[in-house]
Image 1 (cartoon, rainbow, N blue to C red):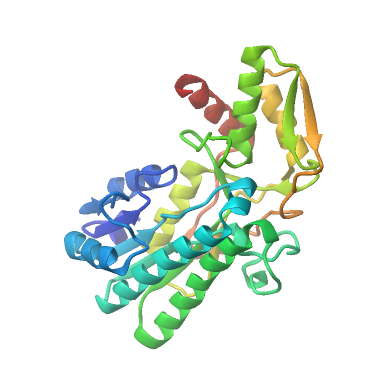
Image 2: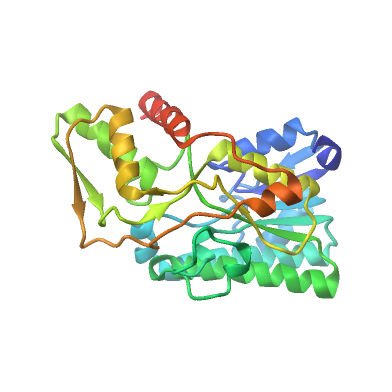
Amino acid sequence: MADAIRGKRIVVTGGTGFLGKPLCAKLKAAGAAELFVPRRKDYDLTQPEAVRRLYDDAKPQVVVHLAAEVGGIGANRENPGRFFYANMAMGLHLIEEARARKLEKFVQVGTICAYPKFTPVPFKEEDLWNGYPEETNAPYGVAKKALLVMLQAYRQQYGLNGIYLLPVNLYGPADNFDLKSSHVIPALIRKCIEAQSRGAKEVPCWGTGKASREFLYVDDCAEGIARATASYDDPDPVNLGAGREITIRDLAELIAKLTGFAGKLVWDPKQPDGQPRRCLDTARARERFGFTARTSLEDGLKQTIAWYRANA
């Protein structure tokens, strides 16, 4: 991996974020000559002039585009227009400028929300176009999926080496624990720990708990993206996941156990479950660039809980 990255100037959008920090560490360890991480206050990537200025300042050979405006079901329901516009605009301008400047490689990190609502489990990459995404996050998912089409079209017409990765739901230390915008794991960890500290006997949980999800530890995801950046050059999208499925109800019970919350989990079926099932076929990542997730869900949850207790 180091031979393919060593000596390159790499821009990592979203490089100060939850996934960006461990990814930058891996790229640096692999010998990148320079990592440039644009700050939102300096570069509004939804604006073409800011993207051009970023490329002028950083002079990248490779761009890894992680930056996104995203959140859980509640945030998606409140911001469907913004989530579509911001994610579509950022990718559109970054890819177009990469083409114009003949960059060596563009790595687009997509989203599992791009898959159809009723995708057969495990999700295979060829299932991406077999239906419409789950409604609560469709604007975000469709915007990100359009960037896959853009990269494939630009490869065909202009020869831009763009790749597209589909990470499953991420979790880990330094996740977003804001209950208004967080995903399910950090939200449940915070709720259980706060209930425990208050002596509360109940924790409210959204939905029925029957939906299932797959979760990928953030450091494992960073490893997968680094490997793909180094050695994957095909137009086909690639899943990044752990290949293990768990219901939200079982997840909540596991988090309650690991945090020490002994009260009752109270489910609210008036709130949406989101996509009914979510679990990936991860064979392509293993076969194309040798990526296999290494962190078990329980071990990853323990590390995430410990981080939250230390930093809350």
